Image (cartoon, rainbow, N blue to C red):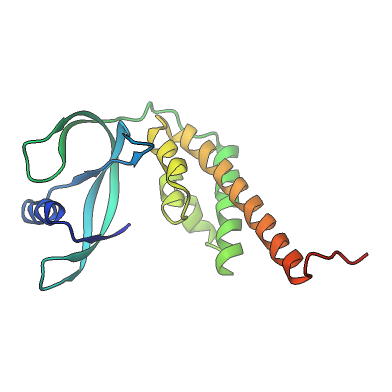
Length: 184
């Protein structure tokens, strides 16, 4: 995920992470609440540093965590966290195949290029979801899932729903082009 770091508190935090080669956490604030489950993130690349201290970076999610306690004494947001482990339940091969097929169909639909079979075979639910711009609540649900099996089921459903939305949007565009009139 690309991030533009401009607030002073985040400049301090990211500078410390770069200096000490540490990760930081991202927690979603929605509906006036801070979600309990977040994602540890590693800085994969610093794209640009501006003279005024701002920077553009690319981060990669590494592991989900549970926020146990916020720490308000530091100049940047911080907290005590518990790294979460999967329950070890692997996806059903048929569900995994359906999810990967749905992913490939979706990618092909929006880019006119289909991922190759070898690339698909190596992708887990996180890998597929990372390349699709889902609503934050969908991504939060994936993060909160406690197993690879549940995540694979969730992405399969997200891909199906997204394809339905694309179909609906294309029909709406077609109808709009006809000025709302349907020819027999």
